[in-house]
Amino acid sequence: MVAATRPRAVGDEGVWFFITADISLFAVLFAAFMHARYGAPGLFEDSRQALNTSLGTLNTLILLTSSWQVALAVHAAREGLRDQVLRYLGLGMLVGVGFAVTKAIEYADKIRAGLTMVHNDFFMFYWALTGLHFVHFLVGMVVLGVCLHKARRDPLDARFLIWIESGGCYWHMVDLLWIMIFPMIYLLGAA
Amino acid sequence: MERLKYLRPCAWTGPVFLMVFIVFWGLFSNNIPPIAADTSAALVADFFRDSANMVRLGMTMAMSFVVFYFIWGLAIAKVIELGIERENNVMSTLALWGAGLTVVPILVSCSFWLTGSYRPEALDDSVLQMLYDMAWLLIDLGYMVTTVQMCAIGIGFLSDEREVPLVPKWFAWYGIWVGFSFIAEVFMPFFTSGIFARHGMLNFWIEFFLWFFWIVGMTYYTLGAISRLEAEARGETVSAGARGTPGMAGASA
Image (cartoon, rainbow over all chains, first blue to last red; front, side, top):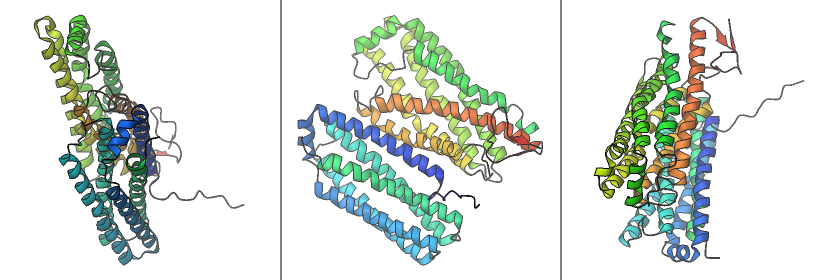
């Protein structure tokens, strides 16, 4: 009888704990947003209309494209194709920079319009949720940068695979969080 | 074995700190939960005047025992240094400094609360409110030194290459995550109500209790790790699946 072997988790198992905990914390914030929105639907709807949905959509496409590139880099790493790993990771980061640029444009626009964090409850959540997400994005860019550096320097062995898979999982989490934030804040209309 | 001497009593100072902190800083001084940030100056002043002796006792005890956090942090840093690190001791050094520096904002903020309770009848309501606000702003916004400690400890234990690591990976990641999540404290100065206020769900109830749980868990695993290191020094090994516990049940010669 052949002993059943447990399939290997993608990336470091501990990273999955981090991702689960982090998503849970965001879930608390999402619930708090929905609770506040339930209490003041008119204010939330009026405030929502001050957001730039086109930039939000662009942000979504940028993150999805970047995640796609990183997924391709992970597949290339499993095949041991260093050139492709470097190319896809580089493209993933380059596209990711677009997120920072569009976010900077959007934030500057809001500050100029006086729609800061203390403007009302909607913008408190807008700045807090997108701000915390942006910090996660910046950490993700650093992690991808480390993977890129390792891909240039180190052998593409099991150790590297753990790094790039873990980084890729984290990057997908950044993506997933945005996919929750975007419709909830930018698109969800009044009931 | 000589290198591991004193580590166990040092590790036990963590729960002592936590107990004193919760009882004296938290319950005696009415910081669990804090007075809401949108409370009027008159009500904050009433609190200081009505509870002066409780706050004096609470803060005196909290200030006396807060150094235990540093001693506890030293035990953890030493476990990383002696049990995991070889030539590079950056993480254990950061963990030690992070623990030591965490003492500072707690100590100084306690002195603000103590000042408010020292002669509250002679101070204006707005001054008492300011002291209360200053204390909370400092203890919350000093989060980054603790974040450094928690992340350094997490990274340090993740570097463990043992088949059965001294601290489970999930708990190392838990510490990193909690330290990372403290960043939500940056929103606290902007609000006097809601989840980001000092008494809010996120910035008080979630963040503080995640930290308390981390202290408890870290103490448990540190005591287990010390037992493991002692067993290793005696030439014993730990079988797979038997993690080090304070009682060290999994060691075999």
